[in-house]
Image 1 (cartoon, chains in turn purple, red):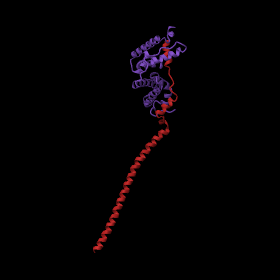
Image 2 (cartoon, helix red, strand yellow; image 1 turned 45 degrees about the vertical axis):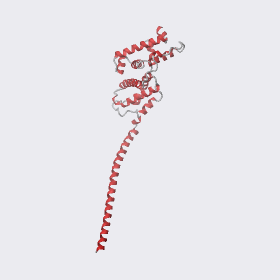
Image 3 (cartoon, one colour; image 1 turned 180 degrees about the vertical axis):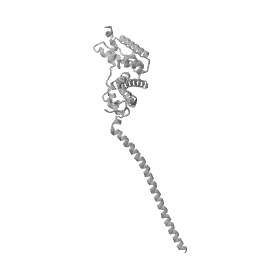
Length: 177
Length: 94
């Protein structure tokens, strides 16, 4: 076990933190940016920052919270910096060619594209809610925004997704029974 | 949680990063800094720098002494020559 010399009090092992949290950090970046190599790059930056700030990390829980927050912020920053707002808009999402055997795959793909088309804040709120299973209070703390804003983003995004899916007839039968 | 939320949960499930991600991170942050070899090599580099600086100063001082001795030797030779010339002149004028 290699303990970082600049964090003797916490005895947090950097390699262990990378191993434990790499999927979480990478997934936040990947789901937000929709670019695998860019997500890889940003996720590495997040861990690089952790390494530099390890002395300030007080516990494994603190590390988890810190990584999630920084991954979210860096992803949003990167998106703004590169002006990589998703190229697809809600209106551009393709109509399903058929309601055939690959219905679930089509639904997953459509959902993916719809999420990618959300504006930055609601998109990150959705990722933290459904990837990380955070409640609105935790999301609010992670993104430094009021809980009411988080709830509003969640409700509006869900309503928008339902509306778009209904209009396209994707997955409708699932909630109509 | 309704079906849409369940679909979102499935669609936004965590994904594994590309193979070798952790290794690249550790390489990038210079994990070698944690190895005793690297820690010792930093001390060695510092010690080498001190030796070079003090050695350089000592060498310059030594060179100064050598130059000073050469000048003194030149003065002594010149003085001997002057004395010899003076002696010749006195002998010739006698």
